[in-house]
Length: 212
Image (cartoon, rainbow, N blue to C red):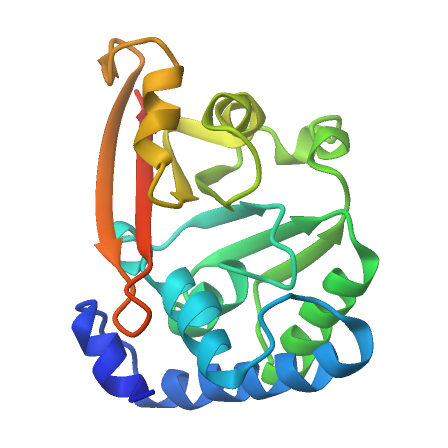
């Protein structure tokens, strides 16, 4: 896969040093995956596209510096690629599987990712921590649960005017329909962004919900 061409195909601008770090992240994930089975995606080309490029597709939706919470991040996606590409972001990544958080912490140490915290927690437990209430401008999640459940999970952590960025597959629009309400209400604005990954052609649906 032509990595730089794939970034360009999605209109993504990433600093050269970040591109090298992202490639190293793919190598580290492959290495750890042989011993610890962190992800079902094991080939380097697939990792580059379906983990890294997929994660970076959020970049156009993140304009300003701020604090981001990634719910159910697994081995660190989209949290780790976003932090590497946007070191100005303060990111907290949450997952309930210890070996996946261990990998994220290893990457944070190895790459010197200041302002990156990987928490071994269930998101339901994190709600009980008052320090995290209304702390984040953005909450992200990739294929974690239904959109309705995700909205309920995210809202306690968002500052007023914060946004939920939900990463879904091609059926993401059906989840919006299942909510049974209008896409724009007095308390939120919902926007759908659709894209295709440049090599596999896999469809993605990014659902952006701004809480007014």
